[in-house]
Amino acid sequence: MLWRTQQFEFRFPRPALVMGIVNVTPDSFFDGGRFLDAPAAVAHALQLVEQGAEILDIGGESTRPGASPVSEAEELRRVMPVVEQLAGRVTVPISIDTVKPGVARAALAAGASLVNDVAANRDDTALWEVVAEARAGYVCTHMQGTPQTMQVNPAYTDVVREVGEFFFERIRRLSHCGVGREQIILDPGIGFGKAVEHNLQLLGAAGSFAGLDRPLLVGVSRKSFIGKLLGAEMSARLPAALACACMAVASGVQIVRAHDVAETVQAIRMTEAILAKRKT
Image (cartoon, rainbow, N blue to C red; front, top):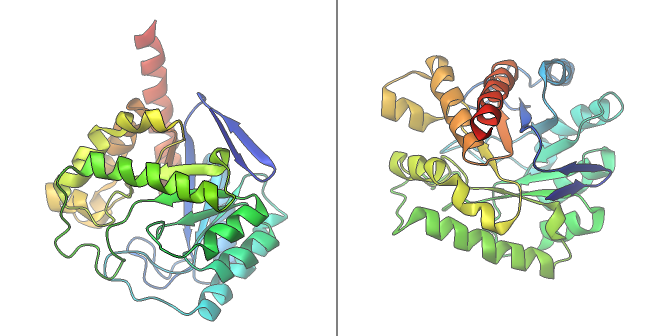
């Protein structure tokens, strides 16, 4: 299976990729405000690459449950200096985590090569057209509602089936907009409009999406469903997040989005080493 994002190509099966998170925001749940200053964000991103991140995900608008939206101008002010400085210093794909076509266009022009879109449930096609024109990679994320409403009583009849149907329909619509199948990554959106039980079902059934023949990405890093299930504060959720990441990789997930890159890389590589011996 081939994934192409502009000049970068990855062929699977191969060791799982870790996407390092760089939040250039004052209100993200884990590191809000720590990297709002561009030099601090760039330094953090470079550190994540040293720790093993093979993709960097730069975001200027928090998508935590209940987060307030920011203007396009403010989002551009936050992320563009970071993207511009990293573009000449790293040899890994830079992802722009945005729902705004204008931000995506500017970031791609400045050196990003991937758009991480948590609002793939959108009706308009403007962002998809930006992705198609730039021949960029695209993370298609399932979300029920919006960040402001997604955790208000999320409901499904069969969450795994419904997310799979969403992916199938989005791939079709993306194709109609000129986004090639080889550009697409699928993200079931853990924590995006899901109750604890929905998240567990999706993590347990990640392999069921293999028939779509696209790389799967999961983001479980210290998310609130872990706290709800185990009673753990955000600062104490790393062990559970690593367990989720390892289980996801064992189920066939190819990309893990994480704040704690060094720990995630080590846990995943050990998981892969064990799985390789199990197969023999």
